[in-house]
Image (cartoon, rainbow, N blue to C red; front, side):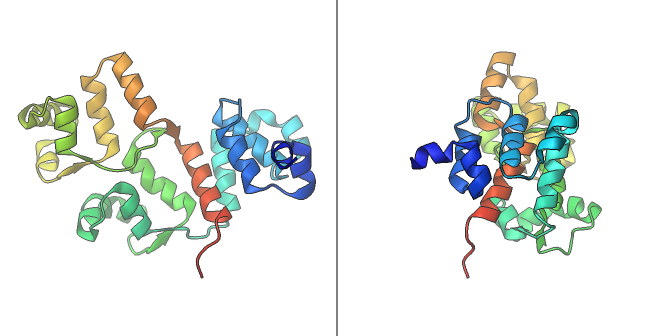
Length: 224
C-alpha cells in the first residue's frame, strides 16, 4: 500500500508530496526528459497549477523551470564557499581563490560567504562552460595526461596550449576546470568515445543538477 501511494499522483495531491515520491518520480520514472519529470513533480505538488499547465504548456521550458526553482528557494543562501570548495575538489582556500576570485569579483560576489541557488548557478556556469554537467571536480594535469595522452605531459601541454589555453594560464595552473577539460577532450576523442565519456561523467544538465540541489537542501533536516 505504501509503495502504491508513493507512485499515486492523486494520493500525493491530497496528502502532500513526500520525499519518496519526488525521488521515485525523478530517478525511477519512465519519463526520459528532465523537463517533463520536473513538470510532473511540480504539478503534483501544486506548484504548477492545472490551468497554467493546460493553457500555457509551451512556456514551461528549461529556463522557466530553473527560474521557478530559484524562486522556490526564496533567495536563501544554501551553498557556502566551503561547499563550493568541496564540490570542485579545490579544498584549499588559496587554490580555490586562484581559480574563482576573478569570476566572483565580476559577479559582485567576492565578499559572500554563502550563495543563493541563482548565484551558485552563475558561478558554476563559468566552471562547466556548457549545459552538460555532472562531474564538478577539477581535472589534474596528471589525470588528463594519463587518460588521453598516454601519460605524456609534453603532448598534453602542446595540445592544451595550442587549442584551449594560452601558455601563461596553463603553466600557472595545476588543475583544469571542467569547461577547459571539455574543450580539450573534444579535440582528442572520436565521436563515439566522446559520447561515452559524456554519458559517464557529464550525464546531467544544469536543470537536473539544480533540481537535485534544491531537493537535497530543502528536504533533508539540517543539524541544529
